[in-house]
Amino acid sequence: MLRLVILFAGLLAVQGQTTNVQRCTGSAAQNAPLPINAYVEGCVEPPCQLPQGSLATVHFTFKAPRTTTRMTTRAQMFSLFAIGIALPLHEQAETCDYLTGSSCPIAAGDVVHYTLKSVVSEVLPVGLTSNLEIMIEDDANVPITCARLRMIVAPPSA
Image (cartoon, rainbow, N blue to C red; front, top):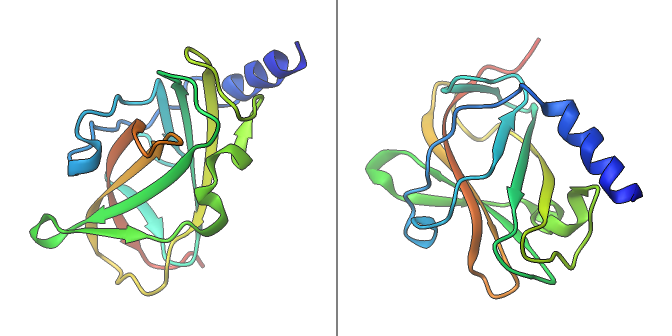
């Protein structure tokens, strides 16, 4: 019951806040379903302005298509020539550690809320425009959900 209350509170926090995302096109995630909701804090309509050195926060709400004991989040950036560059998520790649209102294992049909927080690298040049794909995979490395959004690296916040 407590898990349901926490999940409901988390969903209320982002209710009405949705970022317009697209279906992923990277080969591993082409057929992965979109999340029920995706929200990049501070961005409703892409391209999302992500300042160098800032903490980008992305909320995903998705329905688990099958039971899984473990989930991994992967991020890829696509810019010139549509070549995907994997972005290191470090401990944030352990999806189960960043769920709100639930924990792994996840049963088929569960609605899950995940929050990804990652620093926008200062190595990325200001003005870089790219597509960012965020994919969550199950314990068999099969995509559960994936979202693609357009982003621009902005100057550091003052």
